[in-house]
Length: 221
Image 1 (tube, helix red, strand yellow):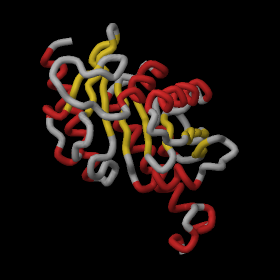
Image 2 (cartoon, one colour; image 1 turned 60 degrees about the vertical axis):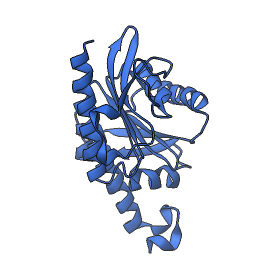
Image 3 (cartoon, helix red, strand yellow; image 1 turned 135 degrees about the vertical axis):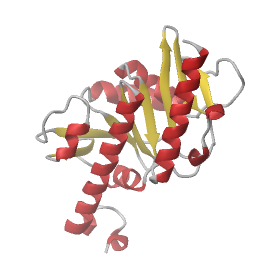
Image 4 (cartoon, one colour; image 1 turned 45 degrees about the vertical axis):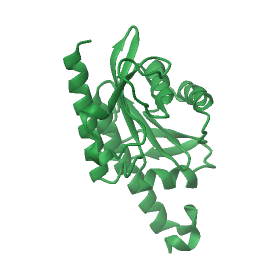
């Protein structure tokens, strides 16, 4: 890995943060974004903690190792760095993106009791935007996990869920948001766009067909 490759990746991550902020997917300091710089030993570029995503710059991106420790200059990485490391380990991902949209947050709570253990989405043409999906006749189950401030413990649960759902392209943390990934940053960003679209479709459809399906009752009337 060269200094130039880190700089280029850092600029790409900052630009993604700005785009996601503009679309309401990473407001305030929410969300975190990473990309793999090297695999042996593992090095990832990841957003620093507690930064407004609409104003990210190259200097707001840090380099971390497989234990979530900063390599090189000082800084505090995202509190959820170990979740990114776990996804990279389990899926051989090249990039991991985490958003906090309104629809993903609401659906992560309202579908908590699903028999699938998550949110099942099927029959939509937009599913073909997910890597390896070639037909709308596809059932995508997005696992929903309880949030936890004990990040090593949560990372373990993420690993278990990814093993249980080997075909999943993403997971949701309850009342928190979406994690998705891809072989490249471009693929991971596309997955965010596809999934955020589908979450809104599912949420709006549930709202119009059965207001009681989503928690909150009168607020959906």
